Amino acid sequence: MTRLERPRDGSEHDVHRQLDAGATRTESSPPADDGDDWADVVGPCFTAESLADLLGVTAMEVSDAAEHLNLLSFVTRDGVLVLPEFQFRESTPPAGLRDVLSTLRMAADAPLMWAQWLTGLEPDRPRYLRPRRRIDALHDGDLEAVLFSAQHTAAAWSCQPETIERILHRRPALGGQGDA
Image (cartoon, rainbow, N blue to C red; front, side, top):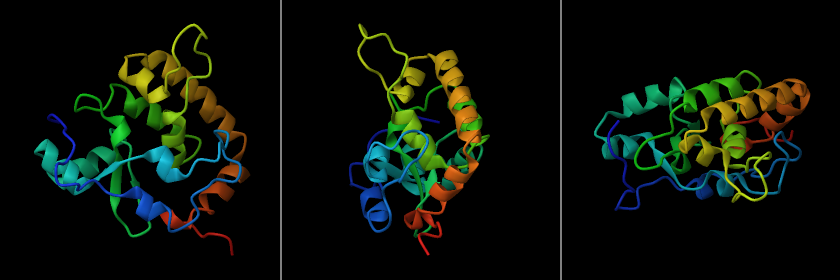
């Protein structure tokens, strides 16, 4: 992939519009619910088309990278594939992202939960160091530590399948069943 730059024409997908239309809060989700809206967790996103234009590749290549977990993505309620901007630094996703996403997917096929986990702070970071999000640790090259944390998280999520299933069905904004 080539260098990524923010679209100058404002073409990044507005996930706030997509997610605010439905249930945007988790009730009690692994990782712990901190009351943030999904749009606040995910932040600005690119569509597959806008990212493809920026990278000089096809939208199919972006979609394939997302399908193979080389990029974090999810589909909005209206069927638009979006890719969170936070996963890119200096135009590229971090090395090892696929390993981390594959590990988390073993417990829950829930990309928004992965996004929340990646944007969460490292829990074991020494207090004398500045707090750092897991995605930033991955960008900084700390794959082993992030992967170890992902393995522990996946194990914890695996112990809570009913909770995971309930959360996945409470997201009508992303095509879930909602509360019936």
